Image 1 (tube, one colour):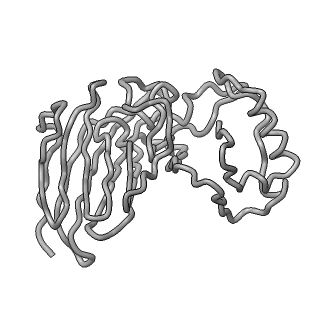
Image 2 (cartoon, rainbow, N blue to C red):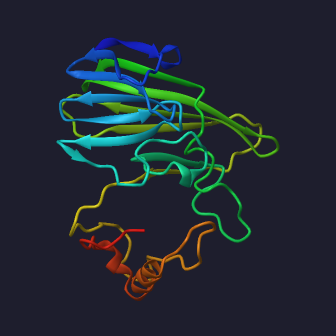
Length: 251
């Protein structure tokens, strides 16, 4: 084990061309700025690489291991400078919540997936060290969110990678800064790229007792006839949603 080395990313100059910040234990960290102005950090290991947006929701924008891209395809090649959820969609992992969750509907006007997905983080750090499990690189950050008479909290997130390991470890913590209880809702929203003929595995029953299909149209979304037919199919046979049919559009 070794004492960790920490880099305050607020002091880093993010340029269009990637710049190496650190090399340690066969891992490399590069910082750059997308053409849209969003800061990004790529951590590369012998097994893969992830790109994280340290100050924009601490989103894991892209992830790939063993040569396979894991992130879904979308119309957004780069993250956009907006807090509107559907105007910068396409990350691999997004933190959602904290004061509200999911898709708003009649009588519920909260932002889609809450305020966290594109929240501006006030601080971000890169930490390199080793522990009982070996060498690691961690990107962490803190974001304070406040709304008068509603909520005031600190959100902390960490993404850790290790050499020779083909996954990332994500941890979050929420500290309530108000003297009254915080109604907490959180979702780690992961967008995997589907695999043709793949199957979704779940722990719920394969019938209407365990699965419900939303039938009303989410506000602001244009629902196509094909999408409606797909909903009808799932309502008749909820288990049919598990099969990734080649060529079928996932909307």
